[in-house]
Image 1 (cartoon, rainbow, N blue to C red):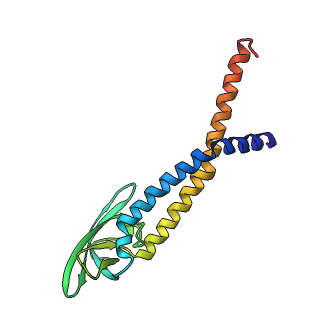
Image 2 (cartoon, rainbow, N blue to C red):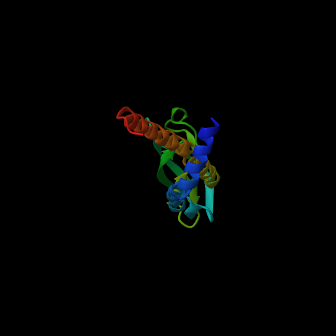
Length: 163
């Protein structure tokens, strides 16, 4: 085990730039999605209650459409990120269910499902999850594969009588 850990340390030192670049690029992509979808709602927005019109459940995620009232006018919108926005799982949502909606005060027709706070929590979760996978789990898997490949290569050369 000690030899494996020492070998892993050397592998990590040799590959740390690649690992950090992968983490940086993936984090950039996640933050870009946040900037495009949530940042416009961080200032000058209001959270209100809307009502679901329809829900589309899928195996990898779900979306829903909703109506909400702002300034005595009825507006509608849709969320393709159900479950992440803090409004609950697909099984608990049905037509008429109340959901939290955030809309811009200056442009009430611009809305998103959930609250900015719920989306910020999701961003923190994604970045932490991404860091755990790319900085810790993936390097261990890659190092184990590298050791197996080297061991197989040594086994072939020893079988051929080469040292």
